[in-house]
Length: 96
Image (tube, rainbow, N blue to C red; front, side):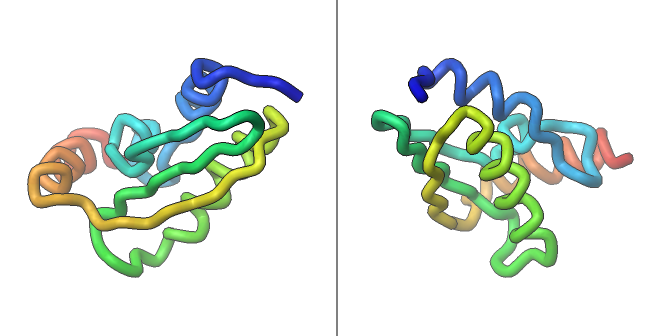
């Protein structure tokens, strides 16, 4: 199955945070996407190490991208101070 980088980004726009009314991309959690053939590398920038819903967030992205036929590899990092501040502002404004 072939898909474009645009297809991947469009699919990610459907993946929302379970408690914040924003997509994971808007929140800066899904930081980088690399598409190579049918392989996608998704880099997650977490607000804090070992957040309790880490596995749920990763699962939601993997599940969405696998509908395109993608093989998904996940890399994990922690947000920079600037990214964390942006995340906290969006969290406060959009908490469900």
